[in-house]
Each structure stands twice: as structure tokens, then as C-alpha cells.
Length: 168
Image (cartoon, rainbow, N blue to C red; front, side):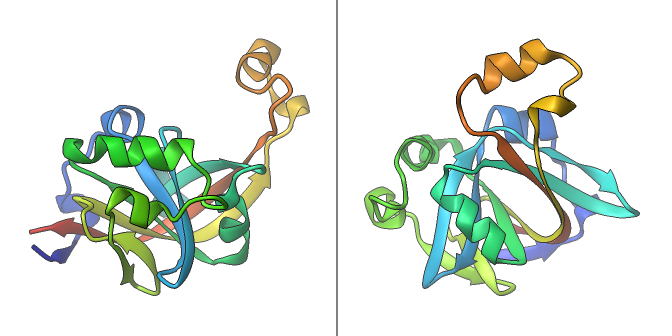
């Protein structure tokens, strides 16, 4: 199987199941120097005249530095049989583990950034906007308390979706 570039309008993607139920790997860096993390929070839609993906990363995550240092990132969606790999990537730090080695996932280069050969769908995104979330911006303080408490805040990244690839 190989990746085939697709037009975004030709994809049948439900962002609520793709992001919230299937999860994804958020990855930044080159295949030689990258980090990936599992995410189940984010948004997909249209902003500033084009298709976009919003991802959030806690400042404590190893992936945070890679998101800061790189202009592009990928969102990789996997078939269900990779659920254990995604669980590992979401519960172990790239500071301590080689996630690809531990899970059997294969990093590959797509448009100058890193994706995984086993993904069924890959979005290649170019950062357009980055903003730290702040307690003072929550209009419902109980949401902030529930999801953060004493944990570090997220930084929000909005990326223009430059390309989408599917396995065929």
C-alpha cells in the first residue's frame, strides 16, 4: 500500500469520530528528529478562507518543543488495529521511549515533515496561528477547573491543511 494525495472535498471524514473516537497522532519534526503524541482533542474546519486543523498541546509534553520549532505538523489517523500503539504513544513520553520502535510504527516523510506508513489518513498542516490558552479566557470557569486544575495549560495551534493522503 502507498499514500495517495487526495482533494479534501473528496474525503468522507466525520471530525467528531475521527478526532474524538478514533484519536490521532500529532507529529512534528523530520523522520530523523521528531516526536509524536496521541490526541483526541482538536477541531477541523474552515478558517481564514481555507481548510484548517486545530490541535492543542500541553506545554509539559515533549511534542510541545517540536511544535514550537517546526512550521509543519501532521495529523495521522489509524485503523482500529493500531489502538494499542496509539495508547502507548499517549501514555509514554518521547523523552524516555522511542515510540516507533516500541509500537512498530514506521516514520515516513511527507512534504518535509513526519507521518507514519501505517496511517489510513494523513493531514499535512502548516502552522498559521499559535496561542497559549489562559485561565482568564474561560467563560465557564468550571471547564478550566475540570480539565486543568494544577496541570499545565495547552497551547493551541491552527494549521492550514496543505495536503491530505490516504492509503490505497
